[in-house]
Length: 277
Image (cartoon, rainbow, N blue to C red; front, side):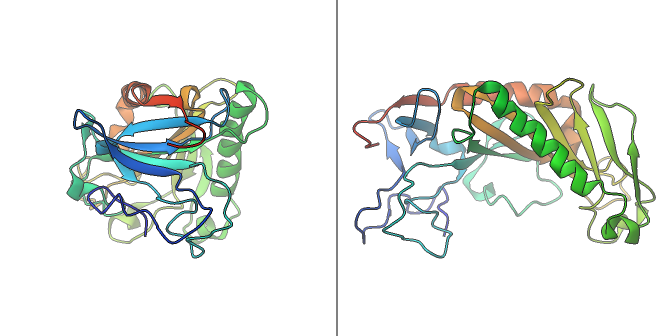
C-alpha cells in the first residue's frame, strides 16, 4: 500500500533487480528527517534530487512503480523519477498535521486540514507559457464537463448553470438552483462553483462546492463541510499544485497561496550523484 509517515518508511522492496527506488526517507545528522525524491524537472533537467521535510508528507510511494498499483514491484518499470507526492498542513496557521490526522480521506466536520498534491510538469513540451496553458486547459475542460446544462446529473437535480457575482476578487461561474435537499442528503459533487482570475491565460482557479451548500459553521442547519480545490503552477519545482481545503477558508485564499509558496520555497533542490539519491 502507499507509504504513510509513521509506518516502516525504510521498508523499500528488496526482491528485484533493475528497479531502482525513486524515493526514500532519510535522517540527517542533526536529527531532521526528509523525503528525498528523484524529481522530474526541466530546467535544469532530469538529474534533480528534491528534499521535503518529512513531517509535512502525507503520501509517498516507495519504489519505481507506485506501491498501490497491481504490477508492483515491476522489474521492467524504467521511469525511476517521482511524478508527484502530497503534503499536508493545518489551517489557518499552517501547522504541521499530527501523524494521526494524516489519513486525508477521513474528513470530519471539525477538519481544518489542507492537503496539497505536487505533480511534475517536466513532460509538458515547451516553456513557462506552455505549462501555464496546461492550467488553463484543465480549467476549461473541467468546467465544460461539470457545467454542462444538459448533463443528466444537473437535470435530475433540477439545477442549471450561469454566471454568478464575483467573489473573493475572482470571477465566478457555477450551478444555480435549490440545493436545500443537500442538508439531509448525501451528494452535491455535481453542484460546483468555479472561481478564476480575470486574466489570460487563466493560471489560477478554484473548484468549490456551490456556496448554496452551507458549511455547518455558516448555518447550523447544515451538517456539511464543503470543500474547494485550488490549481496553479509553481515554477521553482516545475510543478502543478492542487490544494484541497475546506471552503470556509476561501476568503483567505491569497494568504493560503502565499504561505504555501513560502513553504515550497524551503524544499531543497540538488543534483543526484550518478543517479543515486
